[in-house]
Image (tube, rainbow, N blue to C red; front, top):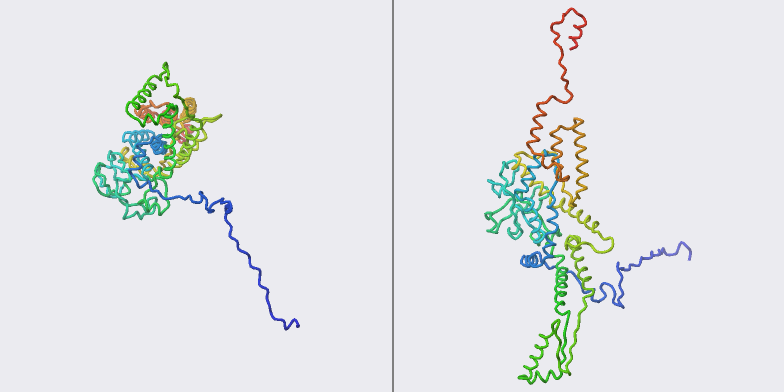
Length: 484
């Protein structure tokens, strides 16, 4: 057949062979790996919803010290050191800090964080005298002395926040617009509270649909660690029960079954003998038995149980992100173990939580606090930073104090800073240096008055002579006067 008459046959391209692969190891013959009908493959995670059971959470918080420590640790550390402000006069800074302490704002913020950790959410209502809680907050309307502090309401003291949502763009978008107080003993009249008048803190973050299932709140810190808590407390109680069985005494009595079966005088005599033996077993007593009876003691060994408890404790620390030394209050063990690295990581976590969960609510609170205490709005360049949690030693404070004093003195000598300004800077450094806290506002005001009355720096006290009597025809003095 010629090439022309050959049928036009095209060779089909080879198709790639598709083979399913698993990104894990499995041996079905040996039943190893996931999905091979072994006990491990039967394990799964289930939704337990402990965050919805308020009674369980409260029973755990009241009955277990480790639960209380796990809930309280992070909120206490987030609020215990306070803040350092900038852009505000040191005198006003002192007034603002004093008012924060007088109204117990830090304590209320700490409690808000605790109940958010325990229940999954909490509110702190800003109490402003003479204003309706159901109306939006306008900070410029807050007058002197109107702010009376915070009132803490956990998620169970307000109605489920469903209904109208915040539509304004910002961090509150999608959150409830009003919160209805249902706890009659809270001290507030039952009714709606506008979201701008509350400081809201949520528990652990949840995905969208799970957050909807929790009525918009977060997750209790106890829910992810519930099984670890039960394991730890069960192991601790179990070890405590073993103490009662650490020293077992065994008395072997010949024909015991027959004596118990006869009862009557025989059983009474047996009980009398056992009681006599028990009473005589003191430090100076002896055990008296029949020649055919036997008495043995068995002691239980507790070796290894301490390591089990420590490992359970480490799992709890990992579950809540708190070092062992902070949660259990124990020094680290082992050669070269100082715990500094773990505490540094923990402080970084606290710093991150402060920025995420506390900065925005605290900024709103400080704006209201300034209006009420200072009578003015915060300046545009106002800012604050959370103080470090690591306490400085006396030597470190002394070194910082010496450097601060040298720098301020040099600035005053170079006329870059007034004497009163230098006093304000030194007083503002008192929390870090432990010095200059005795500088009073009256001393600063007196220095400001002296600076106002004194001539400006560099001004000359030279008195020019009276040249009016000089002859105008004198060309030299005429030129001199014209220059003057």
